[in-house]
Image (cartoon, rainbow, N blue to C red; front, side, top):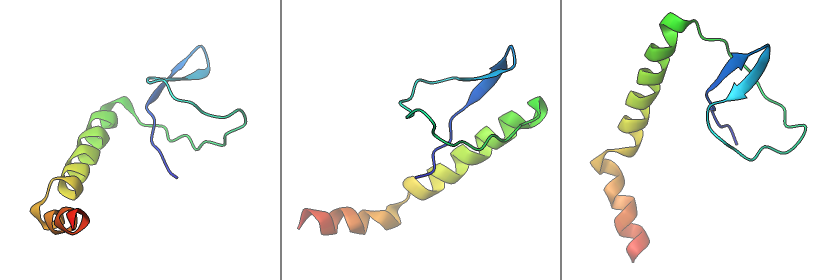
Length: 67
Protein backbone atom coordinates (compact mmCIF):
# COMPACT_ATOMS: atom_id res chain seq x y z
CA UNK A 1 0.00 0.00 0.00
CA UNK A 2 1.31 3.43 -0.89
CA UNK A 3 0.62 6.30 1.46
CA UNK A 4 1.76 9.91 1.28
CA UNK A 5 2.73 11.63 4.50
CA UNK A 6 3.74 15.28 4.81
CA UNK A 7 6.88 16.03 6.78
CA UNK A 8 9.46 18.73 7.42
CA UNK A 9 13.18 18.65 8.15
CA UNK A 10 14.22 19.78 11.63
CA UNK A 11 17.83 19.64 12.76
CA UNK A 12 18.63 17.24 9.93
CA UNK A 13 15.84 14.76 10.73
CA UNK A 14 12.55 14.12 9.01
CA UNK A 15 9.56 14.93 11.23
CA UNK A 16 6.10 13.82 10.14
CA UNK A 17 3.35 16.45 10.34
CA UNK A 18 0.78 13.85 11.37
CA UNK A 19 0.99 10.86 13.68
CA UNK A 20 1.07 7.40 12.16
CA UNK A 21 1.92 3.88 13.21
CA UNK A 22 4.95 2.84 11.16
CA UNK A 23 6.69 -0.41 12.09
CA UNK A 24 10.38 -0.14 12.92
CA UNK A 25 12.46 -0.54 9.77
CA UNK A 26 9.72 0.59 7.36
CA UNK A 27 11.30 1.66 4.08
CA UNK A 28 10.30 5.09 2.82
CA UNK A 29 10.87 7.16 -0.30
CA UNK A 30 11.45 10.86 0.31
CA UNK A 31 10.69 13.42 -2.39
CA UNK A 32 11.97 16.93 -1.82
CA UNK A 33 9.55 19.71 -2.75
CA UNK A 34 10.82 23.25 -3.22
CA UNK A 35 8.85 25.66 -1.04
CA UNK A 36 7.39 27.41 -4.06
CA UNK A 37 6.02 24.11 -5.45
CA UNK A 38 4.61 22.48 -2.31
CA UNK A 39 1.30 24.38 -2.49
CA UNK A 40 0.90 23.51 -6.16
CA UNK A 41 1.32 19.77 -5.53
CA UNK A 42 -1.00 19.80 -2.53
CA UNK A 43 -3.72 21.55 -4.55
CA UNK A 44 -3.17 19.29 -7.58
CA UNK A 45 -3.51 16.22 -5.37
CA UNK A 46 -6.76 17.50 -3.85
CA UNK A 47 -8.25 18.22 -7.29
CA UNK A 48 -7.39 14.70 -8.44
CA UNK A 49 -8.87 13.12 -5.33
CA UNK A 50 -12.04 15.16 -5.65
CA UNK A 51 -12.43 14.03 -9.27
CA UNK A 52 -12.09 10.38 -8.29
CA UNK A 53 -14.22 10.34 -5.14
CA UNK A 54 -16.83 13.02 -5.81
CA UNK A 55 -18.61 11.87 -8.95
CA UNK A 56 -22.05 10.49 -9.73
CA UNK A 57 -20.73 7.66 -11.90
CA UNK A 58 -19.77 5.70 -8.79
CA UNK A 59 -23.30 5.88 -7.38
CA UNK A 60 -24.17 2.73 -9.32
CA UNK A 61 -21.65 0.76 -7.22
CA UNK A 62 -23.22 1.96 -3.99
CA UNK A 63 -26.61 0.80 -5.28
CA UNK A 64 -25.19 -2.62 -6.19
CA UNK A 65 -23.72 -3.05 -2.71
CA UNK A 66 -27.13 -2.43 -1.12
CA UNK A 67 -28.78 -5.35 -2.93
